[in-house]
Length: 216
Image (cartoon, rainbow, N blue to C red; front, side, top):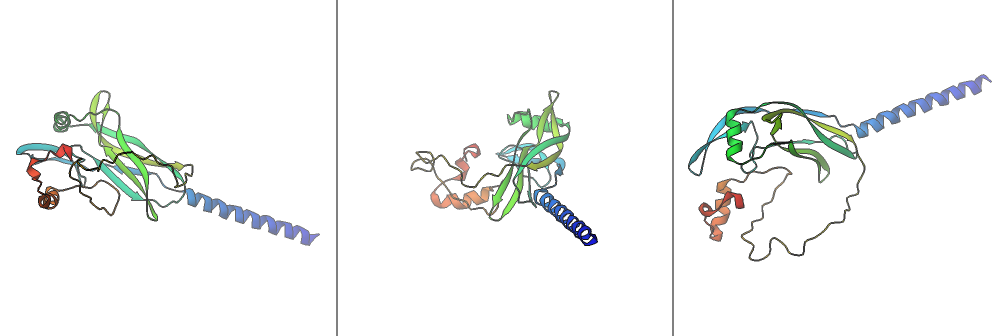
């Protein structure tokens, strides 16, 4: 009688321990901490564009997407589980007159938050990636975005094999212009410098001074 009671108690303790360990393991697999991002705004900078002085809104360590201010962030993920990713704007402040003038002169429309946030798969690694126009309208006024939160939640697993639609005619077909293939080693936004283009276009007989940056 005593032995049966002892055995039952032992089995219950073992099951409780296994359940507890399993609970920890499951939570570890799905765990991906939310991330608060503070945009490192800095003083506007003055640059020369086509012989004209232009004052640009400036974010430390960030590059422009064409003529558009851009905030880029990427971080390696610790979880391999299927996850959904979302963005929440946490705080803003009124944009300066210099910033508003630049946006207006460049015909950059500012309204609701404009961003692309995704989970990128590269080789055996996964990264959370964010590209965002760091301005939005609040109460009809243009604001800087100061702080955002990247949020993760459990998602639905989608197999890698996805049916794709293919166009009948390639944009690379003959007569469509001069095309240059540029290899990159990482996902994200990459800046192409003038010297880089000039070095590669000169052998093709293309004068970089005749190019419109908006058509590249």
